[in-house]
Length: 302
Image (cartoon, rainbow, N blue to C red; front, side, top):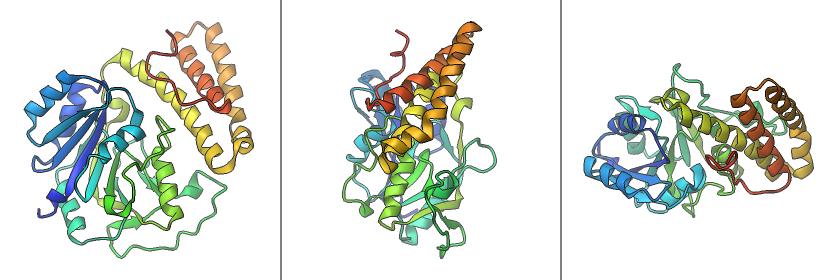
């Protein structure tokens, strides 16, 4: 594998379950440089991992930057030509690096490349903008010269190969977004300059998602955070590309449904769902009012 020295794997973590992260790291070839951005000041975490994995370096961001800014923080420190952004709850299949090395050896012209999560996933790994955004009318006539690669409009950010030489800046992601739509937004900007985005059939990985953590309290905290930011980022995306009025039109139904469910679960004394719909309502209202994406774990119900 001659091209591995041109690759750095970037993983952003924050209070990540130790077993999940260990499974992820153990699926990576020990020859590959790994850069972990830990979104905290946890020096013990840094020392423990660096002592265990000789090919790994941990940088502490000092605070929870989120997905996009956290990856930007890491990418600015990458010295190699290629970077593989990897979520800590992703496991690379056995032949992943071997297949990746083949692509790098062929010197394929691409900006970013996605992977294949197979059938064992709740996530769609790639697709076309028009599937989710009806305002975009695109023809999908472009074909790849490689049988295992499909030309697509977007790929998910859980596992994303980046050709860094294609970008003038290493700050690829919109740092206004804390969570969700960062990958979609990046792909849209790449496509606007006629950049190449591929999805690979041969790069196989497994994304655990919710199935990974066994910490029930943290799972609820993350579910609250996830719902807050999903609503905020959905509105932000529509506002960024189509303006404030269209974003309100597109999302006002979600606001009314969230408020209705908030009252419903309050009456039913369902604490879990009350907190989730309170988060959804708060996230969308904050976005509508032009507030920043401020919510972090534990700050909404203190």
